Amino acid sequence: MIAAVDGTHDATLQSWLESANDPATDFPIQNLPFGRFRRADDRDACIGVAIGDQVLDLRRARLIETHDMNRLMGQRPEERVSLRQALRDGLRAGSPNEALFREALVPQSRVTMGLPCEIGDYTDFYIGIHHATTVGQLLRPDNPLLPNYRWVPIGYHGRASSINVSPSRFKRPRGQQRGADEPQPSFVPTRRLDYELELGLLIGRPSVQGEPISMAEAEDHLFGVTLFNDWSARDIQAWEYQPLGPFQSKNFASTLSPWIVTMEALAPFRQAFARPAGDPQPLPYLDSPANRERGAIDIALEVWLQTPTMRAAGHPGDRLSHSNFTDGYWTAAQLVAHHTANGCNLGSGDLFGTGTLSGPGTGQGGSLLELSRGGKAPLYLSNGETRTFLEDGDSVELRGQCTREGFRRISFGPCRGTVLAASPS
Ligand code: MN
Image 1 (cartoon, protein in one colour):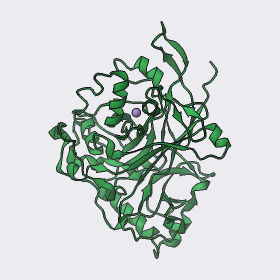
Image 2 (image 1 turned 30 degrees about the vertical axis):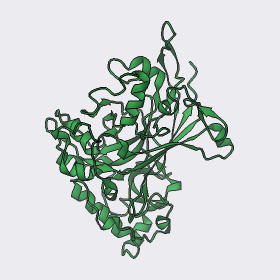
Image 3 (image 1 turned 120 degrees about the vertical axis):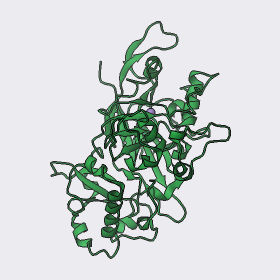
Image 4 (image 1 turned 90 degrees about the vertical axis):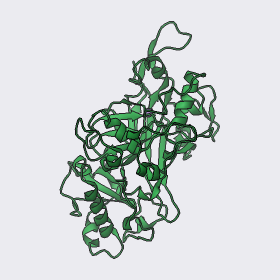
């Protein structure tokens, strides 16, 4: 079942916590995203919910007994809904639990966020049809989109060990690469380091091997959504990707935002899902009436770049592009149904990357590979600098938010990562 709009989404709801009522906050009472945090003196990570500029410690507020986020994520949908209602009831203005909940608050500025859960398996999909088409044009000008694309949600199994939480820093990777005019490959730091604007979908309820999840049940297994940057080394990728797909061009680092915006919080932002005229309809195992009516989610996405020169000058950075989850070719439910259609089982905390979410317009590419047309067209930044790919010291920030007339704006909080110089060889 797709989560329904209920009283927890009421735009007139106010909290006794003033910062949650600030129109500019990412985390009003209608959002309530989950994450894991530590105070300076905490030994173990605690489970918290972001509210205004604070974190609510769910154990101290006596809402849960576990420290185990993956276990919490494995709850049945009705348990998730009742926890959300209890959070709303305790945080709303006039709540009789205000004193208890106040004791359980910590300023976000005084905690360190960890990964929001233990990430089990990680699969990266490729649902951005505009990304797939543009990248395909660079590789195969006559045949940009392969014939399977409109039938099967393309994906590959990625590596969970190198996923870090925002704000993250990672070293420029080294790898094998071979230029078109070079007789043999070399092993050097990547010269074509890129980001990918993606969403991360986190699995809640696990499934059983041999038992596919149907479209009707798919959303019961989804806990929520984060921002996800799938850093990519394009020169390593070009040399290694045939015949089995990406490997070392992707698995050196990925960055996840710390707060999981739940499927329940996203309920007001659901949209109809339809195929463009002339495209094939999804096969029956990837189709359902609910998916057609409300399968898509309107999440507006942005990529920002801050160079070291900008940082030194106090310049906040440039927005490089914007797109939307609805620009993707498949819905979240279709990815769950497809992933399990052969009997593959999912665990609590498994992560699906959506693939790069590029918009249809020029300048809407979700990666530098697209924006610089394979490195041929430099981007001119507002301070006079140029970029084709990322340079050492560059910081990339993904942002996401949901807005709809009659509802409170909710947002994901930033997903930020900074490139460090490669280690000396
Ligand atoms: Mn990717």
